[in-house]
Amino acid sequence: MKNHCKACKGEIPADAKRCKHCGSDQRSWIFKHPLWTIIIFLFALGVAGSIFDEPNSTMQPKAETQLPEDPAVDMRANPEKYIEVKLLKSYRDGFGTVGMHDVELTNKATIDYKDIELRFTYFSKSQATLDNKTYAIYDILPAGTKKKFNDLNTGFLNEAVQIDAVSVYVKRASVK
Image 1 (cartoon, rainbow, N blue to C red):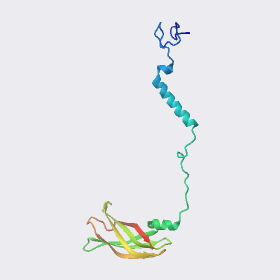
Image 2 (image 1 turned 90 degrees about the horizontal axis):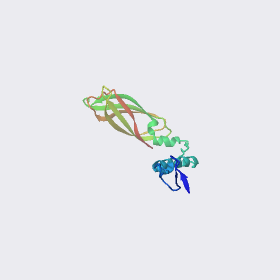
Image 3 (image 1 turned 90 degrees about the vertical axis):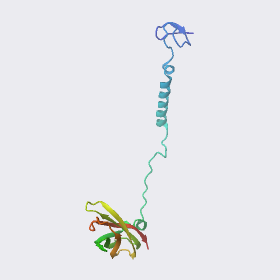
């Protein structure tokens, strides 16, 4: 069987890859450009797969189920949220080298706390943090009460510390 050349219309054998008259390539576009054919095929396969594929359950965002938080559990886990610290007085003692503090703690929880650790942060005139000190109060702070603790000695201080520039918070506490 004979075919005609795509370029010169001359008669050529049916299985000819090139025209014997003009040398024109007689193959189809797919065989002339195998790399592009593969790229287009893979792209089409990906598009078809994404259209007809069912959504993957692991790709779906999980519905957030929020359990009601048990206040007692939160009080045990986060005592710093329930113990209010009020710094009443800060001063230097021991020839001006030792930090001393009077604080008032208020327990706003419905459970008792004990062994409360306070964290004192000391600042310079420029409000740069100079030091952190931890002070443990080995006492019981009953639920719903206020208690004053005087003369808490946090140890030696850097001379650049401004004693009136102190912050304090609850670092940790145990449940009675």
